[in-house]
Image 1 (cartoon, rainbow, N blue to C red):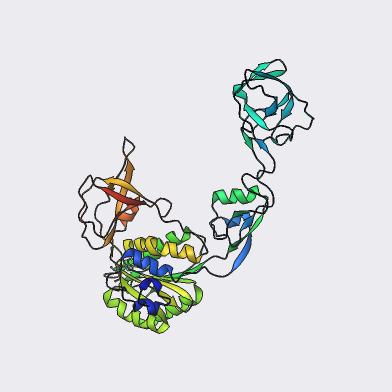
Image 2: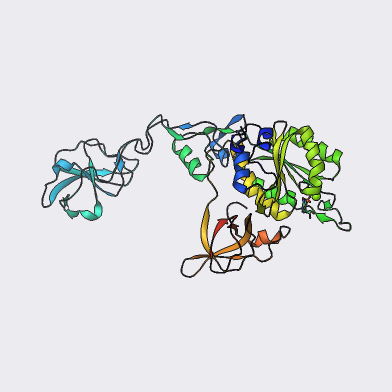
Length: 426
Ligand code: AMP
Ligand code: MG
């Protein structure tokens, strides 16, 4: 039992043959984390609008057939297919009209048709619809050409959903389409997972909060703000625990408090070499935590583990690295813990890179890029410029990550690269 992918505990994982804390490929780290994630317990019933951006905890069952009755997919005429001649035109008398919400209630004799609007109920005795553009009017009659197909343009009762079928499954994230779908079933309340509780803080003696003057060598804490921004995209309960000094007692207190409050604890800073030692010792006392150097840039140091019941993500301190590691590791994990399944992978698309990029083989790089569509409709991407992991403005001017795989070396202009679009994430 030395295979990383089969480890059941973090301790087992850390002694697997293929576990190398000094060079963890991105995919392997992601897969390892995934092994330890199960959705939180706890559900609540909410009015349908409040379910937006939350995760369904129960299937939504359709109480009726959708559509409820056979109806027309077109504005046209409803008729009996057996009335049509195989060749030439057939003249049919128009007996009345069916509107959406106002069905035709008369009885139809042979050789009669009705005018029918899109969505209007199809009378039981009729089986076929002819588009209005296909027929010619002749007084109170229509002339229908040959060549119609039986049952054309009919939407059948239950063809979308059968009564009793699952319209939406547990684990589905509720977006605009799901809100509408739930409403279309006449359902006013649904069961969702309770919000995931996420506690986060920054570590560093140099960090000051807004409103405090900067001393020599100090900087303002920005990571809590980017983290807040990224977390706020999801319906989580957030607990911002502020800045914690690089003092063992203060850091320990913060971890203990955060793990009591949160299903998830996220810290930034303090996991790079030097710092990691005292944080490591402390976390080994409080829980089971693995520290890695991920084979990626930015975002090399990363910690993941459990502190009590809470999942812990120790992100690097550099502001760009915080964002990259959040998107590449934390976002999916939070969605899984929040009950969502399946988690669709973030899409990537090929684009022609117009910049020369410096890249050392041996690690995955997430460079910041500006993606645009040229006049021929082709996607091109240029680098934002300086790619230092402290240059947060590069994230602001970027609209995508340029993902350069492990084996890739320098990139010459004109090379096709894969990009991951940030729109919708940030
Ligand atoms: P560390 O991982 O703690 O060594 O931090 C790496 C770099 O990120 C250092 O230059 C820190 O000053 C910077 N840094 C750490 N935390 C923050 C933060 N919350 N906001 C802005 N910069 C930070
Ligand atoms: Mg630090």
